[in-house]
Image 1 (cartoon, rainbow, N blue to C red):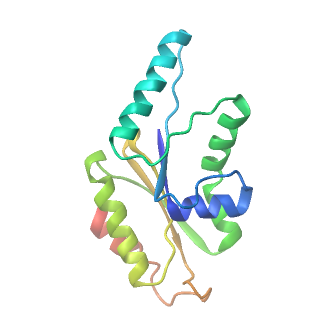
Image 2 (cartoon, rainbow, N blue to C red):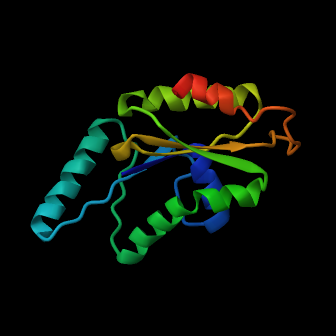
Image 3 (cartoon, helix red, strand yellow):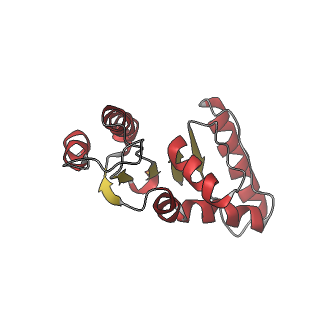
Length: 158
């Protein structure tokens, strides 16, 4: 399972043009596998139902291996897509308890807003690891003086 926020989605879409929903606040990629097709189909249906009941605006199921590969290619392209936009960046991997992920993302966004930084997030909730990428340039493309925001992030999430 993987989560990508809107900033991450937009960065990947600008880079790869995969047809990701750039109007979504976030997307959650959930992969199901197994040896029994009926069980996997039932799991997919259950996951879709739970997502819709939890407020998902859309549930898409990859119909082909190519569609599945595009989703994972997008996820693996977070860092290259950001480097394409802002060559001066710092990537951080930190551990966050699953229950704290929504608040961590909200606070990270607040730090970004305060300093005019785009701070894309991708999260692996199953492992409770929040991957945060800090841009070292502000919205105008100029380098930020001094800190990158990293100490504030660790104060909020660490």
